[in-house]
Amino acid sequence: MGNFGVHQLRLVNPYAVAFREARSAVGASELLKQAEEYKTVAEAVADCAVVVGTTAGRKRALEHSLLRLDQAATDVRQNLQTRRVALLFGSEKIGLTNDDFSHCHWLLTIPTQKDCVSMNLGQAVAVCLYELARENKSQLTPSTPERAAAGVNEQISQVLLEALDKSGYIQPGSEAACQNKVRRMVFRLGLDPKDARVFLGMVRQIVWRLRQGKS
Image (cartoon, rainbow, N blue to C red; front, side, top):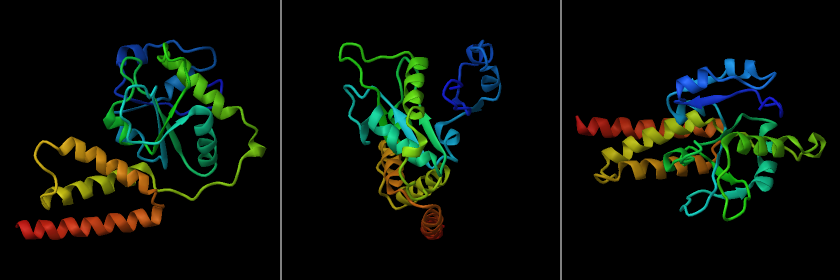
C-alpha cells in the first residue's frame, strides 16, 4: 500500500495478535498504526460509494459482474476522481464469502494460470494497486455520476428487508439468501445520494404503515 500511494487500511475482525504485533516494511509502520478495525464488512465500507470485491472466480456461481484486473482498473480509477472506493480482499484460506460479495457493486479477478489460481494476499494487493497506480493521470476520462455511500445502501436494504418480512414475502429458512439478494439489487441500482435518501424515506414509510397494521 505504501509503495503505491494507498494509505487507508481497514480490517474486519483481524487476528489481533498477528495484526497488532506485525512488523511492517520500512516506511510503512505509520500505515499499520493508523489502520482501522471493524466488526463487519458493512461497517467498514459504509462511507464508500463503490465497493469492488476480489476473487479467483473459479468454480463459484457469481451473481456479480466479474472483470479482469486490467479492465476493472479503468473503472476504479475513474471513480476515484470523485468518490471513495473500497477494494475488498478476503482471507488467503477462503477468500470472500457470498455475504461479503453482497456488499460489492462488482468483482475483479487477477488472471492467473489455471493450475495455480491462489495468490498470497500481500502479492494480490500489490498487483492490484500497481495496476491502479500505473496509468498516467492525464489519460483519465471524465468522472462518472456520484453514487450514494454503501452505508446508505445498507440502510435501504435493511429497511426493505423488514418490509418484505412483515409483508410475508420472506419464507422461513430463506432469510440469509434473501438478504444477499436484496443487498445486491440495491447496490446495482447505483442510486445517487439524493435519490437514495428519498428511496429510504419511502421504504421507511411503508414499514411504518406495516407496523401500524400489526399493532
